Every structure is written in C-alpha cells, then in structure tokens.
Image 1 (cartoon, each protein chain N blue to C red):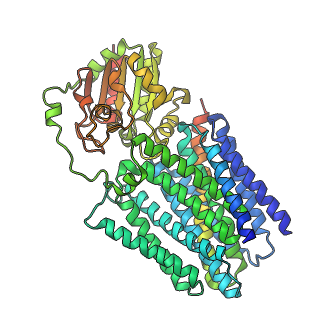
Image 2: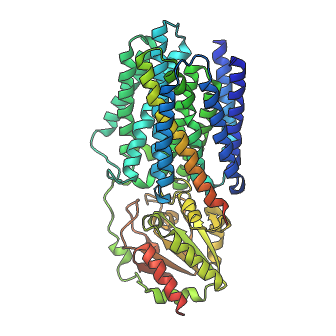
Amino acid sequence: MPAAIVNLAYLLASVLFIFALKGMSHPRTAVRGNLLGAAGMLLAVVVTVLDRRIVSFEIIVAGLVAGSAIGAVLALKIHMTAMPQMVALLNGFGGAASALVAGAALVEALHMGAAMDMQFKVSTALSGLIGGVTFLGSLVAFGKLQELITGAAVVFPGRHVLNAVVAAANVALCAAVVIRPEELLFYWALLAASCVLGVLATIGIGGADMPVVISLLNSYSGLAACATGFVLQNNMLIIAGSLVGASGIILTQIMCKAMNRSLANVLFGGFGAQAVAKGDDVYKGKVKAASAEEIAMVLANARRVAIVPGYGMAVSQAQHAVRALQQLLEQRGAEVFFAIHPVAGRMPGHMNVLLAEADVPYEALKEMDEANPLFPQTDVSIVIGANDVVNPLARTDPKSPIAGMPILDVDRSRTVVVIKRSLSPGFAGIPNPLFAADNTLMFFSDGQKAVNDIIQAVKEI
Amino acid sequence: MELFVTTLTIFVLAIFVGFEVITKVPPTLHTPLMSGSNAISGITLVGAVLSAGTQHTTLTTVLGFLAVVFATINVVGGFLVTHRMLEMFRRK
C-alpha cells in the first residue's frame, strides 16, 4: 500500500480519536464516541498489517489473539468496584508496550546500520524512561488498590535521597543512550532503572491519593506513546498520545485542586502515613448512635434527601441498596439527590460509575459546586462511607492537614445521618467533628446492611 | 531538523486539541474517560505490529511480539470496559 494512503488512513484514525474524546462530553453521545475510537484503532491496525515491510503475519496474529483474549476477559469479568485497579493495569501495559517498541526500533536501527538523528535518540531514551516508570508505577498502584500490598503510604528514612539518586541515575542513563546508542546495554539499564523509579514514585503514596496517581499514570501512558511516535516518525502516535497525555494532566489537576494540595505534596508528602490522632476529646459524650427505626422516622418526613457516597460504599458494595433507598424515598414523595466529591473513591468518577451500575439516573448525580448550595435546604443528608470529604475542619481549622480542601457542606443540612463502621478516622488521620455535631445521627454498621435495614424500617412505618 | 519542527508542531497542536476537548467532559464520565483514553494510548500497537512483522532480528521479533500482546490488552480491554460502563450510563 502506498505510503500516502497509509498516512491518510492514519489521519482518519487520528480524527476518529478526537471524535471519541469529544463524544465523552455527554453520556448520550459517549457510547458512540467510544465506538468511533475503537473503529479508528481498528483502521490503524489493519492498515499497518497491510504494510509491505511486513514479511510474516504469524507472530502478529499470535500476539493480537493472545492480547485480545486477555483484554476481553479482563474487561468482561472485572467488577465495577475494581475499576481503579483495571485502569491502573491497562495504563501499565500501555507504558510497557511503548518502551518495548522503542527498544525494538533501536535494535532494528543498529541492525540495519541506519543513521540515527538526535530526535530518534532522545525520543527512544524518553520512551524507555516514561514507559518503564508507567509500567512498574502502575503495577504498584494496582497492587495497592487490589490490596496485594499495603494501601498506606510506605515511607522510610532517606527515601528522598534514594529517590533523588535513582532519578539522577535515570537521567544519566538517558544521556548515555543518546550519546552511545550503539551500546544496547544502556537502553536495558535505563529500562531497569526507570522501573525502579516507578516503584519508588508510587510506593510512598497512600490509598486515598490514588485518584491523583492513576490520573498521572494515565497521562504518562499517553506521553510514552507520544515519545514512541517521535521515535517512529509517526504522526498518529503523536496525536493520540498527546490527547491522552492532556487528558491525564487535566484530571490530575482537578484531583489536586479538590484536595487543595499541590502535585508535589501528593507525590512526595507521604500523606496518609502519619500517626492517627485520637478523637476522644472531640467525640466524648457527644456522639449520638441511632437505630434504623430512628433514622426511618427522620426520613419519613423528609422532603429533600441528599446521599453522599464515599469509598466505603464501594467496599461494602452498597450501590444497589442505595439505589433502592432512593427509589423508596422518591415513591414517598421526597426529592433525592447524590452529592459526589471529586476525590470520593479511588479514581476520578469512581462513585458515578458504581451508581450508574445500580441504575441511578445521571441527572440525580450532583457535583460539589451544584450540591453545596442545596444542603441548607436539605432535610436529611445520608453520608455513607465518606469521611474527610465531609469534615468541617477543612473550613474552620487552618492548622488541619485538610485545611482549605473544598468539602461537601453536609453539616448545613437539617439532619445528618452518618453510616460508618466505627469512629475511626479517614485517610487524613484526623477526627471529624461532624460525627459529634448536634444534628448528626451515627449509624454504626456495614454500609450495605445499614441501608437495607433503613429501607426495611421505612417500609414498616 | 525541519522534520522535527513539523513533528513538534503536530505534537503541540494536538495537546491544545486535547485540552479543549477534555475540559468539556463532565465529572460523571471521568472514569470512562480514563479507560477510553487509555485504550487510545494503546495506539503504540501500530509500532508493535511493525516490529513483530518485519522480523529484522530475533530480538526485534520477540520485543515486537511482547509489545503487541501488551498493547492489545490495553486496546481491547480499554475499549471494551469503557463500552460496558457507558452502556450503564445510557440506560434508563
């Protein structure tokens, strides 16, 4: 196939990728967008397979079949609650593929005795670096989310020094690849060093900061593809990679802003490893534990109810119970909305996906800026499995670790019901005065069981 | 050098397109956005297919094969799981 036709097909694929992301601007158009993206990908692969430089198809077909089978099984079997792990894993595979392709291109250039220009050498080094960091960084994030390794921030003395040394080694190896590309060993050493950097960069980050990490790795997987595009002089890779890179960067920014923390603080702060503060003086004698029947009595007269989900809802798989409660209250004439904090859960939009799985219409899902003005006119706010994102200390205590973080102002609603197993602190390790507030009822129980008990009690009224 | 500038131009413009398009995505769809964009970053599959199929050396073939597997998992898994999620948002 003539090169011009191939490149035109690549251009068409690039346009389809842009349409794919554009489709994501509304749930109605998103399905079609995703299909357009998949069509673009199919077109790009088919055109490439027909390239006349290809002498044998067996290896390609074997790889495509194996990859498709693994990918399809993963995609169809995965529970919606495990979506953050899934995305982390896919990010990692993308990064690994880019690093391997750049390595193959380098080997090929050496074999053919081709002249290597600066662009080729620099972008090969960058593909290896970003690809390796993305691969192992994503695997660590996956391990944390899947609870194969501790979800807490792993901090040890001298970690900043070690990080700096490993980062410097990576820079040095990048330079070595650029100066002496004929020494293949430098490239393999760079891959190894970048993998170590990937581990060190993610191991010190605690579970609740995972939304930032996954967004950032998402961006890296795009940038790795981009660097590979520079290696291969392929504009489609560059366009697709930049789109993904931009997407990840935007999500990273949104997540950091929603926590009122800088990216540097998230990456190097070791947040979530500090000693947990005792809340005795905050809670003593002020916490009111309530039964399902008492909560049902409050809900019976409520005209507007807010449901505020957090990671605890995902852990106890309570999304279907929550949906049933919403329907029950709506049948009784109440207006029910869901207030979703941007960093609730373990990845951007995590809560929304779970609620969509349970058939909650997306119109009922309110962002923080929409929800906050509604709380003062809300009769009951039900907080399920959320803690730091509803902690009023963020507004009132400038010394608090979460000072200035935008929160959901549930404390301004008439009554607050908090469903939680215990008074244990959230990720920030601080007590939450909301639990001791005059208008708060605590329901100590597993999330799913608690919601089902409340449903039962409301039905019996 | 001239070629590099052209490539760089495409890179910079594509980043701007990305920023413009992505900022319009509502928070509700952020998870499918991540998995979907992730699938798109599997475009490196194209490079992998070339390495696996041209068979210059055994090493490039092995690297290419591994890259095809990884990238295909990324592409197929990404688009499919995104589709699954988006279907849930669409149904009423």
